[in-house]
Amino acid sequence: MLARRFLTIIAVLAMTGCAGRTQAWKPLFDGQTVQGWRSYRTASYPTGWFVRGGALTKAGPADDIISVEQFEDFELEFDWALSPGGNAGVFYRATEEYDKVYWSAPEYQLLDDAGHRDGRNRLTAAGAAYGLYAAQEGVVKPAGEWNHSRIVADSGRIEHWLNGTKLLEYELWSPDWEAKVKDSKFGAWANYGRARRGHIAIQGDHGGELAFRNIRIRELK
Image 1 (cartoon, rainbow, N blue to C red):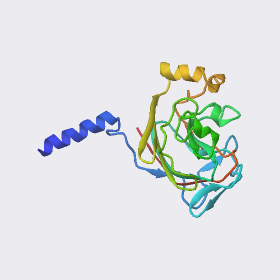
Image 2: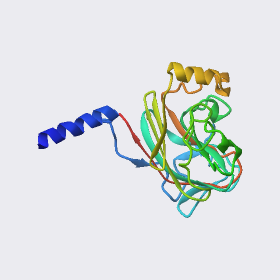
Image 3: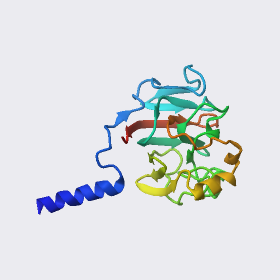
Image 4: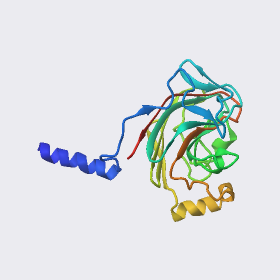
């Protein structure tokens, strides 16, 4: 019986692609400083960001920021909260080859769906792969409340999760993805979504308050 149960566990892990690959979780934010982050395309301290109540916070337009470290295959988790009408994003495998981070990196949309016009379109609503893959409705919490997000990037397979619900899954570089990129604004940048390794980035240039806590990552190797 025990042997059968062990084999079943191994089979499940193999199907998820994590058997023997998952590394330990490590924090990307220590709850006290902005150490480990910097402004996009500069080595400077992230302008407009501060730590309040154990949360990485901005109160208005601020720099887009990126992790100092780069990552290839990973699971990323974080809690986030927006002020009413808020709009932001978390990017993965970002490079610094372009003037704007969203010209190279796929985006996990952060949004107050009820208070922002982008919430009317599931392609630009909370949890969407912005402009490309839609997120289901009714999962994001109201503005001011904490949401918990998870992003899985395993080679070309990408998953977006929100508050324990899997919102979407897509395959980078697949024919479907290529067609969607070509028909979107991202088709203007030849290297959009092409990097297999890059930074985690947070969009700061929109107005309103945005806060993060419990940002952590574990690599899949």
